[in-house]
Length: 455
Image 1 (cartoon, one colour):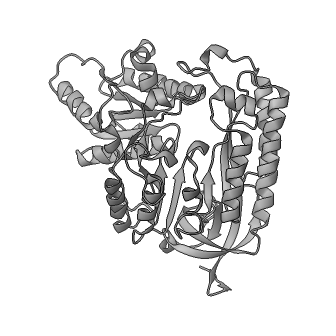
Image 2 (cartoon, rainbow, N blue to C red; image 1 turned 45 degrees about the vertical axis):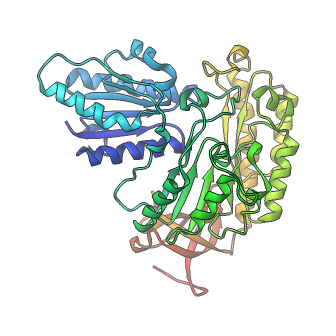
Image 3 (cartoon, rainbow, N blue to C red; image 1 turned 30 degrees about the vertical axis):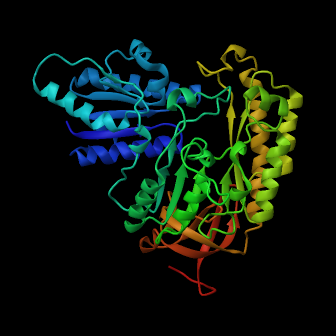
């Protein structure tokens, strides 16, 4: 009864939470298995940002119940944002869940599983569902454990929660208010990762550039987040730094100035725009204008001409007219994003946009979504073609899914690059000449001292 499979839905923060839970369980003697068919216990770490994510998690839990009927000792747990959002109402559809854990109680999962297993071994009646959804002071400091094996690239949570109250967003309800981790703890975690061979870290926060603005002082005009970036930049062994996701409201000159000054800060930023219409941004309760967003992008590109920019956009927000959507298309054309995550709006219970309903048809949302995807493909392909013949620094991550002897890595601009290599180069920074380009992937060849080489 100690083989656990964790299935994760949603964002990078959820991935980080799942990794921390897995590490804590390993420390308690549990075995983490990659195939749910081999597991005695399946934990679903869920997402509530979009309705589809919740539907997928509920569908998976329902499917797992069929296995329960064949094996009464098999256990199912639901963790994370959907558990926090839906609460005990989940039990109306899944009455025989063993475990329901919210976003501030991931660290309690090992204790809860120990209790469930001990109760089972007592041969008594099946225990009631363990429900742990309470807020807990200091919970932001509990997501710090990492897997024992070497991680070439690692996520590091620097804060939890969000104070922005965007009208479409469930995160303040599921994650709570902003809570920052102590800077010394974050630096110590990254130093340990570096000692274990990690080359790249991504700092995670709901509004990452608002890190600790209420807890720590500014120093020499630098925000706490910039101070943290400087300290991470000084850690031996760390070669690359990324972060996600910033918000325009907290984007100051001190952060812009970091590009080019901090040599390990990569030439890439994920910068959510959400809409190109000021009217819709106001309805979304996003406290900036499109012009303000463009000014930040222009300042970043002036500081770092090679910067790659990705974004988030929601299509079909209630009241979005054709004119509003055309403004978003125009903003795409003006900024020419390199990558984007384009989402069709779905109503989230408990948000201030919920009373607006969902008046725009799925068909129209799909049309608008595809139009932006078509634009994005054009811009991404054009950018990738500019890299043909150039030599890029690539961090090799793993064997590619297709092609014998092929490996995959990313350049500093977060572009995926596939190349022939060998296992010994996984985790290494290598020079790669780009030979082919599509809208999503680059193909390259290893270069040694200016000469292309085989493996």
